[in-house]
Image 1 (cartoon, rainbow, N blue to C red):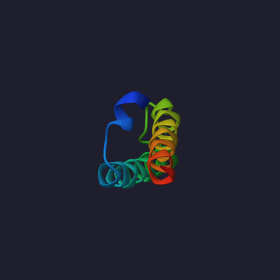
Image 2 (image 1 turned 180 degrees about the vertical axis):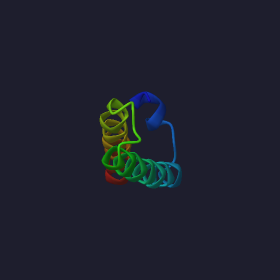
Image 3 (image 1 turned 60 degrees about the vertical axis):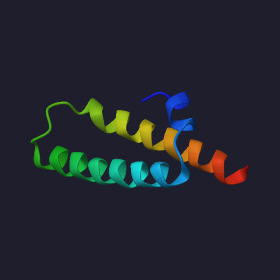
Image 4 (image 1 turned 30 degrees about the horizontal axis):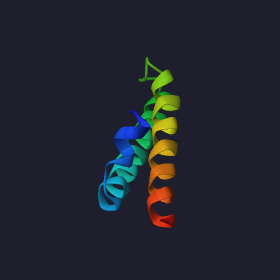
Length: 63
């Protein structure tokens, strides 16, 4: 997920994206604990995507 693509989205889209990513992160963490997750690197990728989306959201709210 590229930051410049996130900057083009509206506040509502970013809010929905953050909620979706947090739900996906919860699922990945649960699968990791139970041993079902083979690609554990996805957890850090999702965390970084959440940070990017929150940064873009905060930037829009400040302006």
